[in-house]
Length: 205
Image 1: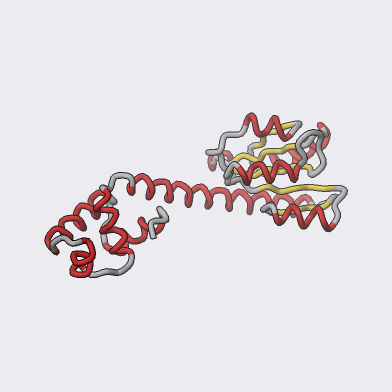
Image 2: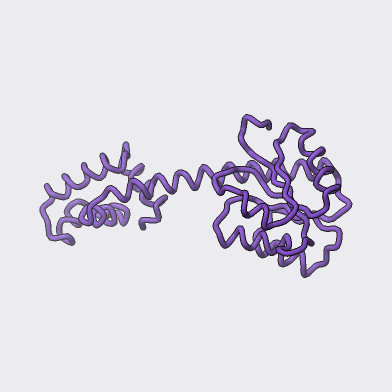
């Protein structure tokens, strides 16, 4: 992995020496790094389109590491979070995983283990971004449809035949065929299965 892949490792820690140490370690494997002293600084500077992961301390003044993870989840930020703690206990770890952290690593930690987990988190971030983009694209295509075309699409997803659709919608089979052709064009689907896949991506069930 390298800078060309566009992923950034965001370090959030109020201890400057820890930030510098983590930056040195992560940059040693050619991963770009951005550092923040507080969770609020990170929230103010992060753009949701960026891929990567967050490495943060669980105990910080103001917004804690766990609070930041929950804030990211509430804002639907698809950015894996790795929490590092020197004062972990079972309830803290349970809360962290329940809130959706990618990993919870206790100090002292093995450098290679942390790097491995960061790289795995970045891969997850990329995968999530691709899935989000595909879903948004499907939703955008769905917006092109008329209300009648959406009704026909519902019927197609449900597996209805043209005759069944015509009967349920009280229109002719020929009109159904016209709507189906328009659906294929507007949704940019090469086949009926492709049309159904796009509809399901857009949560049109």
